[in-house]
View (cartoon, rainbow, N blue to C red):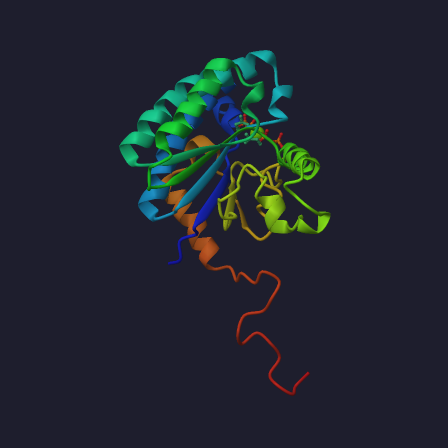
Length: 244
Ligand code: IPE
Ligand code: IPE
Ligand code: MG
């Protein structure tokens, strides 16, 4: 079984999972956050090297003030847990997204998480928080424009795919091989749109709080049944010589 090097997850369905149990949406978020820990451990056990999870999008601010507030409070405690978990499990954590809109304590927790784990050599764990692909690309292009103006980029010809990618939040992180979205929706919701160019997409109806290690293994099994081509063909797929 080939284990994808990088798995990206859109963890969706916390609210619906809770509502279907007659519980408030926020209860779903609490259970969802606890499950992020489980899946980190599972990913590491399976030999996945990079795991990236979507915790809060640039569009999620549109939710009710109450829900946003509850999520931010949850992120405070979640990041404290993550700091401990990163230490115990040798995880290296990085943050994708624009932290400037988050409150000062959360920003501090996130920097501590990144700083304290940067020498760790186990699972590379990326938290996408206040993340949106379009926002990421705009921030990247702004910094690129500054560097062009400042002279460290000499000509527009120097702006290649690699160059632009090096300005993204995912600089130095390989592209995801497999994208998983839980809870039935089949869309990207502004997630890693540059990086997912050639990822295999896997959608499951299982809501995030119920997504277990077994479900992750199922996704990897399906991934193994896919033929990745990256625009080319595999040996043996071409027409036989001379048979046009
Ligand atoms: C995912 O669950 C978590 C976040 C987006 C913060 P949702 O909150 O989107 O749950 P549903 O999709 O409404 O069920
Ligand atoms: C995407 O889920 C964002 C996160 C998982 C953090 P949403 O639930 O916000 O996406 P839409 O609104 O259904 O597209
Ligand atoms: Mg949702």
